[in-house]
Amino acid sequence: MRLSFHGAADTVTGSCHLLQTAHHKILFDCGFFQGQGLGDRNADPFPFDASTIDYVLLSHAHLDHCGRIPLLVKGGFTGRIVSTMATYDLARLVLLDAAGIQSEDARRRNRKRSRSGEPEAKPLFDTEDVLDSLDFFDTFATYDEVLELEPGLRVTYRDAGHILGSAFIELEVQEKPQGPTRRITFSGDLGNLDKPLIRDPQTPSPADIVIVESTYGDRNHRNFDDSVEEFKEAILTTLERGGNVVIPTFALERAQELLYVLYLFYTAGDLPRCRIFLDSPMAIDATRVFTKHGDCFDEEALALAAEGGNPFRFPALTYTRHPDDSRAINGHKSGAIILAGSGMCTGGRVQHHLRHNLWRQECSIVFVGYAAEGTLARQIVEGQAIVDVLGEPVANNAQIWTINGFSAHAGQQTLLDWLDHTGNPETVFLVHGEDKAEEAFAHQIDETLGLQVRRPDLDSSFEI
Image 1: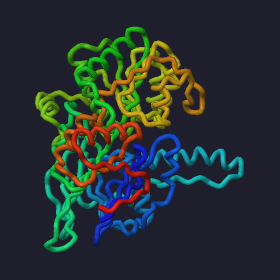
Image 2 (image 1 turned 30 degrees about the vertical axis):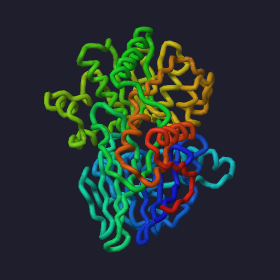
Image 3 (image 1 turned 180 degrees about the horizontal axis):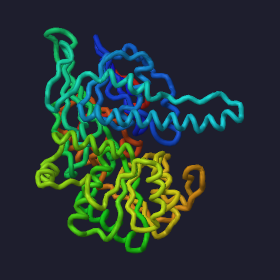
Image 4 (image 1 turned 90 degrees about the vertical axis):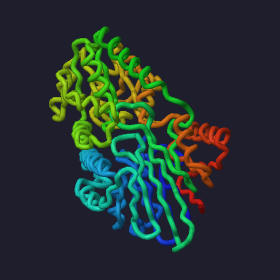
């Protein structure tokens, strides 16, 4: 067998790993590259023939894991896509949103190109392409159920505790009848511990080969309860000095988790008079999907629902789907808590709110998730004095908070504990991490577990 890495290798985004067996070609994920200088990679042709891929085993619905599926289908893919049902429902939203953003970007560029005589820009894929690709989602996994895709090829999805419907994938391959069976385990993105709404990551089975993420391989997260207290402090101090709180928010999981925490603040009487805005059409749609998949919730969330509580509907909360309602938020000079995408500030409505609030010293920008290199979020977090927002220079004067205990990714120790349960794999491949994080994680694996570690480069290939 051969394993090749065509994304999330030498960088965090673009998850896409190809397993070639004697009889099949299988992709683990097929995601978008994101971040400064990386987005151009999405237009590059795949380094394999899309028409020869038999299966896509999709771990979860984040764009950097599912975003190139429409391109795969445009390239000739006619195989089967396997995911959980929750992942399918969320991936549909994510891909349609991405198609809309690309089409709008193309229209904006073409207004300038037409005046200068340049050729017309086209989106990488459009809504029709997304709808075509959704037809190939035809196999839906339930956690812990062994799916026999065909003789000699079995797959089990386990709860990764990352976002709703997320999974790590255990693939068992038997290339010859009566021959040995090998298990290849792909972590996808593993979740942090003790989070609200969804469960902690499950324990993996022993494996022969492991592909594991390393986003936070160089550090551990703060205790979640401590992070909640800091989050409360950020809100209260900002509102007391007459500012707004802007929270760049990932639409899947993070938005719903923050609403849950804000609901607890509200019902406990901890919030002063304020307005909470969820200003993200995709996050609003994703919240509806959450209400459909209560089977993925943890005991705490289920108990709250049984008591009649609803963190997605309470008096202080306003959903702003229409652009006019979004623009109206700018009339609130104080007392507003604004959750808007995108989480890395690479697009979406949060950029408009940054333009109106980032320069104001009384306001706060609260980051509760990962900020990749080259993104606007990273520039703000690192204290760049002037940043470009929607083509305009904006002073970075607001108070900046980074609260990493809300991360949907496992920290170093959680990753090590998970990996320890895979037994004594022949090789551990590190993906989905920046160089510093991968290097630190590789060192810890060697020191504490004594396993052979490889750090693949983009498009590198290994016999396994």
